[in-house]
Amino acid sequence: MEASAQIGVTGLAVMGRNLARNFARNGFTVAVHNRTPGRTKTLIEEFGHEGTFVPARSPQEFVAALERPRRLLIMVKAGEATDEVIEEFAPLLEAGDMIIDGGNAHFADTRRRERALRERGLHFVGSGVSGGEEGALHGPSIMPGGSAESYAVLGPMLERISAHVDGEPCCTHIGTDGSGHFVKMVHNGIEYADMQLIAEAYHLLRDVGGHTPAEIAETFREWNRGRLDSYLVGITAEVLAHTDAGTGRPFVDIVRDAAEQKGTGRWTVQTALDLGSPVTAIAEATFARVASSRTGLRAAYRPLPGGRRQRLDPDVAGRFTRDVEQALYASKVIAYDQGWTMIRDAAAEYGWDIDLGAVAKIWRGGCIIRAAFLDRIRAAHAATPDLVSLLAEERFAAEITDAQQAWRTVVATAAHRGVPVPAFSAALSSYDTLRGEHLPAALIQGQRDYFGAHTYRRTDREGTYHTLWSEPGRLEVRTDGGA
Ligand code: 2AM
Image (cartoon, rainbow, N blue to C red; front, top):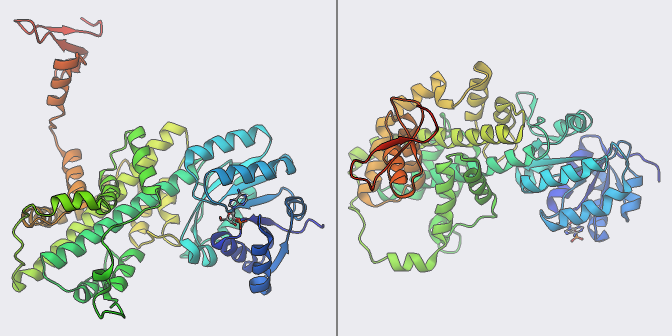
């Protein structure tokens, strides 16, 4: 077989098939392969006219169809299947060839695979791909990791098939080894937080504001024309405006209130604990999904009293709606800031040189959290290269300052009325924690020293100290050898 394909895709379920079509529609010759040949055949029959495909029946045929250095994209289920497919193809490849994993792999697996393949002279590019089936076909946001050398060969192709905003591709080289999948994981964590925050805003407008889903849909439409302009706010309006055909009731009222997840939010939280990144809004959003599905616990708690359930008077409800917008915006800034903090922490831990502004830039289109807001984050990083936090930037700081009274009112009102706002309040607490001059962490250190001699440091002197709590004089001793 003549080696004519610039890229090969193996694993032709819907994501793989759509990415293959996207490459072909952009003028690339695409070799296609699937373990079960039926999928390959169907792709050619249904979409063969869209571009130049080279169907391959065997791994050998597939590899032979690829130009060198070979670019082989695997789109199979994350986990064991990925390892199996790598093992099937790696022996057929030569030095300088690359295997690209576009699935939702855990970044630690990607690090392991990259190292193993590097030792065999092959490039391994773990690449986050966001945007679902539609994004894969029409332009996703793409987050490739791996070596700079592999990006030089592969990057331009990925940039071509990615979404574009203001003429710029939503694809950039994130950093080495597993950084692409890491950043994709954090994207999903932020997505969980954003969705939960929007859901809490809806809950408040409904249960406290007394509005109908159709009215709230209108509110979200209006917000979507302002600073909250985003894909998620847009689809929220659509979902809320939808009426169930069978019952004539609002669609949100016929859906069971038990949220599911595929696990990337959980990975974000687990990893954040390891890195020491305080991603509290993301964590609460993840736990909120988990809690909603705990039928037994919910049944046990259900008889217990809540807050005052009376709705707001219509004359103050309008004001409340504006306050909720402020609270939603402020909480969103915090949630995104938490995500960026986590990326910064991982970059330091794993030695990744990540351009934090570029991450915002490639999330402006193609992915689930795409939003006008991300351009502001991009601009903040462009203006201040080592930006420690979004809140260190003047415009975000001014907005939060402006929002904080409304934000507090909303969280307090929710508490009074018994409406759960785990993500709103986590975001506000995070704000108050990080801005606080004195934290009760000093007392925690005292407790730790008391029961475990864990030592503490003083505000007025250098050194590490322990107090002899059981001795009458409670004498303090310096434990680090200093005088
Ligand atoms: P299949 O059509 O032969 O099942 C999503 O499941 C995609 O991953 C499908 O294209 C599927 O191929 C492929 N896949 C899953 N596990 C695989 C494995 N162990 N080896 C090869 N392909 C696999």
